[in-house]
Length: 154
Image (cartoon, rainbow, N blue to C red):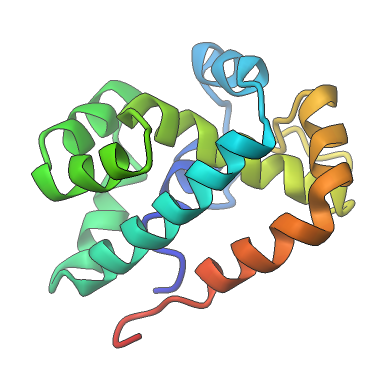
């Protein structure tokens, strides 16, 4: 399963592609999250390290499957109670909440900037974050695509 941990927050918000209602507080947190180049440059290396960590686990597919059905507070606790995950986040200057809100904010802003999911109520991105993503698409997309290519054994 590609994109294991870095897409986990997006899967949890989007319901793995199934029609879903995002919790209003989750939706608002993503809309309120202010993307900057500095923050994107913290999130992307954290996504890379977190993805490599999760896909290295023997039960990564089951972990991801379970995580997407967890309520936000439980996903937050899961990361906060994982010393390796927290070390990755700390190394990148992030909290668990920064990661769980920032990753979907970044990825969905990039999707919206590329015109993907146009008209979908599942793409949650503030106009400011979409403009940020458009302005930095050439720089950020290759970095996110590199993370997207991480799979077990890589």
